[in-house]
Each structure stands twice: as structure tokens, then as C-alpha cells.
Image (cartoon, rainbow, N blue to C red; front, side):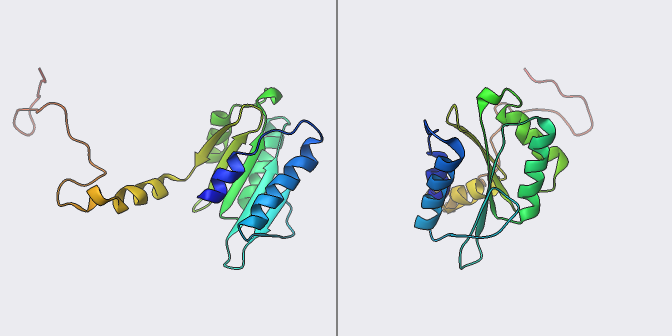
Length: 167
């Protein structure tokens, strides 16, 4: 997870945007053991253990956003980073997330949508990791109610099959 956090911390450079971002993302990837590989994506990195990450940068219209997301989806990378800017005024990160989930089957791929201008990010398909963290926590190992169930606030009284009213 440190790799993802480092990528999300990258700030927008003042000079040549594409060159500076490519340098920064490459440097971070090399530090974490990734090597650059050939791909139709803007940047693609692989590790010796089979892990891979793909980067796509997009500031265009909705159809260009969709084609960039398609490249990331077809790349087969476990981690996909989609970088855009809020100054493009095309789509918000939440709308990009909706476009991704509506049009593609992402299976086990994890997507990180990054707004380079505002410094915001949105993670997609990371829910299982959060659940595993909760299960590994010491309080989750106690005998009791499972983590994924929440207590009801009020008791509901009545028999099965009849209309029940709450106070």
C-alpha cells in the first residue's frame, strides 16, 4: 500500500507536465522494484513477482476518457492509475468511477483515480483489502458478532408475517 500512497502524493509540476509526471512515477516505481515494460498505456511497470501497474493520463472528452479506461482494463495490470485534472471540466472523479463500473468488468484489478490539480484521489475495488484489515485487527479475533454485521438501533417486536410498527 505504500506504493499507492507514494503515487497519490505526487504534486502537479510547474513545468512540462507529461515529462515531469513520467519521471516522478518512474522513480517511485523503480524504488518499489518495478521495471518499465512495453504497453499501449502511457506508462506500464512490472515486477519480477508478476505484479504490474499501468498509468494513463487524460484531459480530453468523455469518449477519450472511456478509451483510456479501456486501455487500462485491457492491460491486465493489477494496479491501474488514471490521472486527470479538475481544470479539464470534463468529468469529476465520481463520474469517472461510474463510467468505469458501468462499462467495464474490472474483476480483481484495482483502480486509483487521481485529480492532479486538486490532489484528490478515489480508490475503486479496494473494499476487500479494507475488510481483510478489519479481520486481522486484534478486536476482530474475539468471539462475538462478526465485523460485517452492525447492530440494530431499535428492537422490532411482532410475529413473522404481520405488519410491525416501530416506536
